[in-house]
Each structure stands twice: as structure tokens, then as C-alpha cells.
Amino acid sequence: MNSFQLSIFNRGIVIESDGAKVQRVIALIYESLRGESRLDLRYSVTHKKGSRGFTLRRNPQESITASNDGELVFLLENDMTVELQKLRSDLYFIHAAALEFRERAILLVGPSGSGKSTTTWGLLHFGFRYLSDELAPVRLDRMEVVPYPRALCLKTTPPGGYPLPNGILQTSHTLHVPVKCMPSDAISKPTKVGVIFFLRDFSSPAVGPMRKADAATRLFMNALNPLAHTADGLDAAIDLVENNICFELFAGEISATCSLIKTTLNSLPI
Image (cartoon, rainbow, N blue to C red; front, side, top):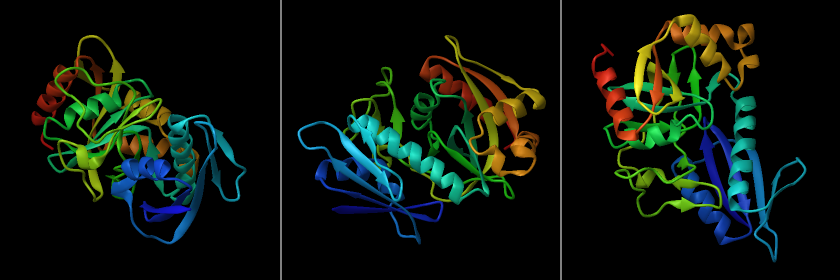
């Protein structure tokens, strides 16, 4: 078995596999998180002979079957996310993309399909730097986002003007842009939150301020581990919006959306 060791939020994860194909997939997605920490999780992946399928096991969990590489990546990522929330229950996990701009973390909060990853890919061409595209763990005592720079995951090819580089990983379901292929650097240190955008998909880009009560409700709805925190995570959501500027963003055409975000941020005293 080949072995690939990760250090994520100071927790050690080992992924073992029986073939070069799986190793290549894991390396392209998680290379920037490679490192050594005290071992907390161990996964094994085996290719089912004569098929496109795989078997995924987290000891001592029973095995899970993935019918193809896209489903394997989804199942592995989903299980790791849940287990990391248990291991780092001190962090407040938000379903959000996170980027650095002017030494502050900018959060793009929204459910799947709201355009977080596509907007993130566009913003990387506008001088923003990468923290995460799907998971924003916040250290509440410092109001800092802890980086999670796995490969950026896109469900579809970006629109014209923002082509994908060579070296991406294409699975049966998704496109993954490794950190080393991104047009700007990734951030490796915790970054203080500055502005929170709550995304909605719309044809014409627009942005407007949000009432704190509405922002707290939206943030709470996108929290992944609220029950691990006091008052079932509601106090944390309120603190985050009280201490940061919040906007509702109607995302549309990627260039116009990214220009609007950058113009909005440049007008703020962050």
C-alpha cells in the first residue's frame, strides 16, 4: 500500500491506497496539506478489480463503496470533514469559501450551488489569495479563519476569460485546481475575518448591506457544527456578524461579480 500523510488543523491523517491512480488523485487535491502530526485518522482505499469502483475504509468503520473516482473524492472529503469537526470542536465550521484581501479574510457564505467556488476562482484573478473554497473553520477567540487550502473544486468549467490551467484533476463529477496551479498564492496562516458576503445566485450582480439579525440567521444556517458550541452555536453566529461587516451578494456574470466585490471592499476601512 502507498501512503500519503496530511496535517489538517494540527491533526494527522494517513490515506493508504493500493494503486498509483488513487495516489495521484489524493496528491493533486491535498498536496498543500501534506505534513506530519500526531496520527488521528487513517483511511485505506482499494481499487475494485475489473471495475471503475473503489472501496473506502476508515478504521474501524465498515467499508464504503464508491462507483467511480468522483464519488470516491466526495465520500472521502465528506467523512474527513465530519471527523475533523469532532477532533477540532473548538473551531466553528462554516460552509463558506474564504480568501485573503488586504490582510483580512473575506468569507463567501452560501449553500452548494450558490456560486462560491466559481466566484472564488474569479477572485483569484483579482488579487485575492486562497484560504479555502468550501470550508471555513473559525477560531472564535481570535475571530480568525484557519486555512484549509485543498484543491479548489468546480462542478463545471468556468466561463470564458477564466480558463483552467494545465495540471488540473478531472474526475467523473468535478474539476479540481491544485494550489500550485492557482493564479495567486495560498495563505498558510490564520487570518482575521474582515467581511462576510452571503451569496445568492442571480442574473445581475448586486450587493447591499444586511441587517445583523438577518446575517446571523444566514450564518447559523450555514454552520456545520453549531451544537459543539455554547447556546447551540447561535452566540458564535451573532458574535461573528457583530464583529464584521456583512453584505448580501447577488452573484452573476463572474467578471462583473468579482469587480463588484473588489470595489466594495476597497471602499471599506478594513
